[in-house]
Image (cartoon, rainbow, N blue to C red; front, side, top):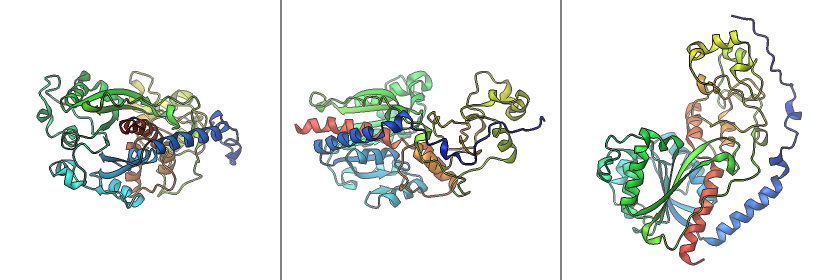
Length: 386
């Protein structure tokens, strides 16, 4: 194995590296003013629209929608640690730590104290699952047992005015597009007019390249009265330099690389990856991945201060999806990942360190959710003649 000689040196005092104002920071006051104006308009346009969220996770989507003015009357989340996170941060939320299948079987009008047709929004994103019968258009009963089935049951029983169904971009091509087409067919059968679009969180005040498929449904009887428009992308976009970075966080806050992996990563400059170091060292580290096709740009990837993060994942130690810190040779801490996901620092996560990483990685970025929520609030307000 070749001798390691670190080349990606970082000054001991790296405060000077973060002192330079980025375009995002230079325009921060203006952005705050514009955000306040948008939020004020949203609050004027509505008075606490009622929403229920399924597959709520650690609350990224729910928090963003709350910031847009929605009042959550129920959240369903099966994972105990994630449900505890929701309860800890919002004791007033009605959080059901149960299997969504069990909840869907109950009388939902009684469960959430709301009549069918009165709910303003159903939100959430069911895990992506194949439908062997996709493309046959057989109806809701033929997707029974999948997580999406229970989302659709909530639609059928509560008949919300709008729904927000979020998922990974890959759902569009899953099973050659048949899975998503089946989902759209069922939404139509349940009485909803749908529209969908892939949004990149980086366009909406999130220092991260993260694409999400956002599907919006409007109940058929309301289509002529309300129109939903997706939020307009920002012209100023944040980067890693724009968030607070921790200095040598403890083991309870941050995962660590092995000694050998730390030695290799010490050679990689911020913004670089495996091609930026000695090929012999890179080959020894990559092992069988060395012979794989493609750019393999996620291997030995070190993020720089002046770029957005790549998609925040649930496990910081996977070789093919490395996300090394720009200033210290380590993964990002779970709190740094939460900041990248635009969670406020006061939002506490429950569970073990690995559970915290998982909750953060699975979340919808808060700022993205807020932007979508503001547009939903504006659409719902038009039903009231505001």
